[in-house]
Image 1 (tube, rainbow, N blue to C red):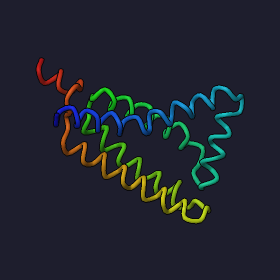
Image 2: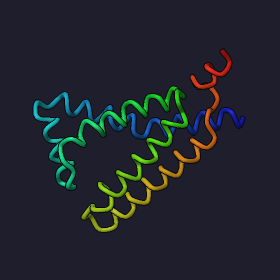
Image 3: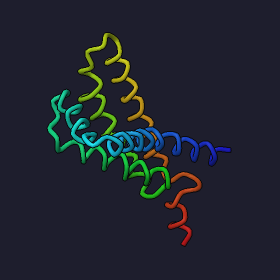
Length: 134
C-alpha cells in the first residue's frame, strides 16, 4: 500500500504543472497572438518575455519527467524551486483581496510536497526503479 501511495503522490504532484501547461499551450496554439498574450500576462507581473519559454519548458519537461519517474529527485527539486518562484512573482503581487495570499500559500505548500517527494525518491512504478534493476 505504501508503494502505491508514493506512486499516487508523485502522479498528483506531476499533473499540477503538466496539465496546466498543456492547457496553456492549447490556448497559445489556438490563438494567433496567444504566445504574445502569454508574454504580456507575465509582463503584467514585471517578468520580461524571456520567462515565457523558460516557464513553458520547466513545466513541460520536469512535469513529464516527474510523471514518468525519471530523475525524480532532480525533477522534484526543480519544480519546488519553480513553485516558490510562481508563489513570489505571480501569486504574491495578485491584487485580488485575499486571493494573492491564498495562492501564495498554496504554491508554498506545493513546494513542500515536491521537497518531500525528492527526499523519498524514487517511488514505485518509475523509470528510476527500472534503471536500478537493470
